[in-house]
Image (cartoon, rainbow, N blue to C red; front, side):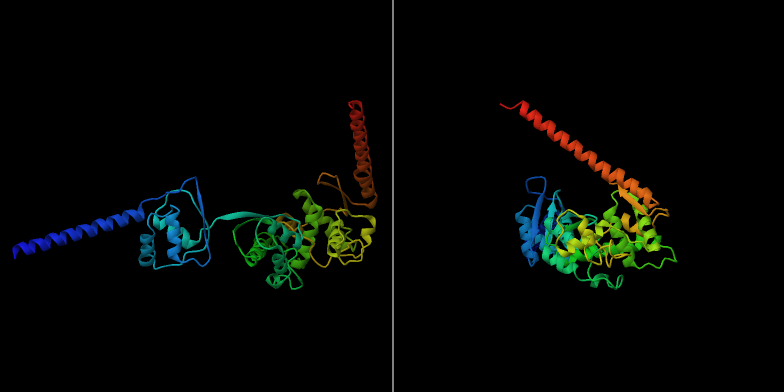
Length: 363
């Protein structure tokens, strides 16, 4: 009897020791940083619809997890089996099983920069995003053609022109078009409330739409941020006095809408019968002509208090401003007529010199 009891005790001790050893092995496997893949990093795509078992087995196969079964037990019994998010993941450093699971549970997927530059039309924005590998251009354009997401801010909006905020975004591969467009509009709304609306005086009766329309024209006219408030000031002065804006970018937008813009604006184009033609129709055009950036939005909200009614390009992104038409005409003569006459003469002289040099070195 004593021998039997001793044998049982030995068996119990062995089992306990084995259980303890197994437990220690499991604990160590889970908590020991692990990495068995080559190269500085590993990208793994977790497909939509994959179950947890398949995901963990894939990570073990790729050398990210030491033991998929232990990871599954930990996920179910310790973490109460939360879902693992689909997407593209980047693994670099050795990590413990709980650390890897935390990344998958929180969906820390790889994102890529997507640039939306200032001054693009709705269609141009859709094309630019699609060209960067995110979304279908036609689907993006379709979503951008609905004003629903901005209707409370601009009840007159017929689409999202002007409300697709230019910025550098971070999107994961496979981000759907709905989320992309929603992000651009949400960013506009947030930046408007935080950085533009506070600039408006209490007595300012202009609507959001009027400000965005003005900002879109400023965006297309001004190439230097410091000048944007002055350009906005010029247009504000013209609006107050009932003077037509005479803004070339609005004519260009009208030509784009008509499908006849070829990159050059001609004298006859200034006569196009469109409500966007500010040479023909005084006041602001009926809607934004592009997506203005923050600097232009702020300039429209708080135009510079200047006496100017005119400006002309120096051909380097900056402008010369004038108060009277006579002064403006002198500036146009200097910075447009004389400037281009001289530039074209220099180019012709250079071409002749090159042709002459070529003939002198010929066979």
